[in-house]
Image (cartoon, rainbow, N blue to C red; front, side, top):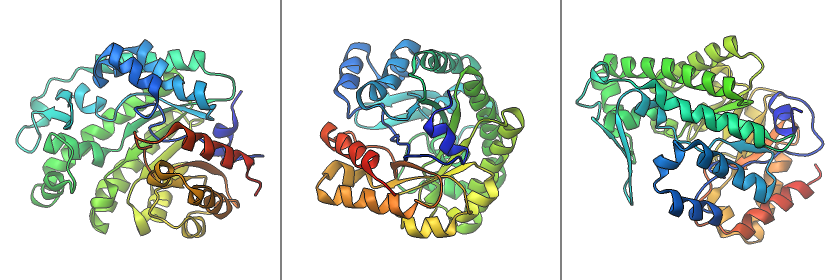
Amino acid sequence: MPGLLLDTLNGKPADRTPLWLMRQAGRYLPEYRALRAEKGGFLAMAYDSEAACEITLQPIDRFGFDGAILFSDILIVPHALGQHLEFMAGEGPKLSPPLVDAVLADLTPDPTRYDPIYETVRLCRKRLPDGVTMLGFAGSPWTVATYMVAGEGSRDQHAARAMAYADPGKLDAILDRIVSETITYLSGQIGAGAEAVQLFDSWAGSLAPDEFERLVIAPNAAITAALRERHPETPIIGFPKGAGEKLPAYARETGVDAVGVDETLDPEWAARELPAGMPVQGNLDPLLLLAGSDRLEQRVRTILEAFAGRPHVFNLGHGIDRRTPIAHVERLISTVRAFEG
């Protein structure tokens, strides 16, 4: 049974707007926090297929979302490529050695690190209620490269952006390897049961237009083309956060089936400028969901009205804030599901 979300991603008309939230399986849920206290760190849970499946299903059990997003992390790919990965309390992820100094070819890949992720997908697909779409994902090459080059996250992606100018050949080699690895990784997720996949380019907004074309659009287009050849029935959602006015070019040139819209964009502008008939996803500000208030319902209706003329998946403009009250999520869901366009 395909389900409302999958039908919408395939451009089919629907009697209501499907809904899921980025990072919906995570720290805002008390059941997640309880399991993490029992199991240990984030990475240990991501590689524990039973635990990861339980976390993936927690928001489905509680809220009845139309899609279940795999509980994992975009840095599984660099970990499989041979960088050491750990999540430091209060500091975020650390990768070593950073590729600003090291050479990717000197690392020792371990593709078996994907196996527990595939098993999580298989377990979740078996346990999901009928009609709920299983979503896989990976980080887009530029965003993954920023972590691999710097060895950590950064506010302005300085190390990778500097490499793009000073040593473009080295960065291109890193991106090419990530592209190849991401094709393999997402193909494995689809083979395990993912019904749609999303490419997260969280740092796409840090690039100038020429670099956006070369470092965001071109790598994502290569992944999309390869996946379409292997899995022509599987929709691909592209989410280049911060793309701004470059989003329509991304939507046209990458070949993705649906495009995510972040909270900084006017939904009426996006509805007007994106390719006609292309499914869109978004774009409520996660901080408005955190704050609640009457403005939450007003903004939800504004978004739904703006995208009423095309296939639309309601979502946030980025991941849900870990401080978000459960009651605000419940209010969001009831507002979306009560809407009549």
